Image 1: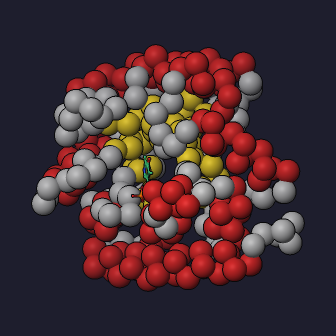
Image 2: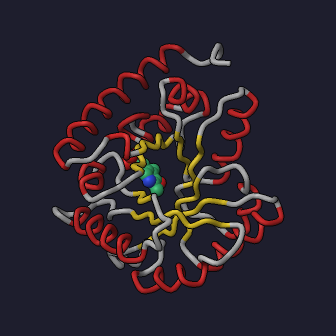
Image 3: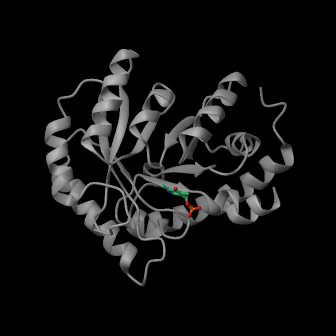
Length: 242
Ligand SMILES: *Cc1c(COP(=O)(O)O)cnc(C)c1O
């Protein structure tokens, strides 16, 4: 069912994805990693579902959204078209919106409190599913940022790992948006150390790195990079035009 997917748009995604993969291969060979150990998540937020479908047709099988209101209709549109993407929720999730996304996500990256994790667990059990989640950490201690503190996440892992309905797969972090030199690197390094320190052995996912800073995230061990602008283009320019 790819007949109604815009071929020109798909071509553009193929080109951008190719460029990204060439860079990813370079970075991986520099740091001795297998490129297949890094999953590229195409962040389709703000762009219409046609763009997400074209990205999917170009080979980007993992797609990310940061808002429930955008994620849900896009997943439904994909289902109707018979397109089987892995959907990632990467943005802040409010407890009262959990019910709308259960069973619709491949991975929820942005779990930032024990209460939220418990709500996801409860709703998942009701729906007979197990939800894969990441705990979002704020290692930079920035006030404006969501996420567990370093001490908080250790405690949360102890408390949550026995909970049915959820499976913690690892950690997610964000570097400061306007980071000064070396700041993002510091955040990624600290997060990797924390990840290795508290990984109970069952974890396999470290989500960090965006269009501007993914290279260093990969060098620090990211398994999932969340790429919006470098694949979809400038969101602000798109919304201004739309
Ligand atoms: C928007 C967003 C991204 C992608 O950002 P780009 O800089 O456009 O690649 C990654 N992660 C999260 C949590 C986001 O909200």
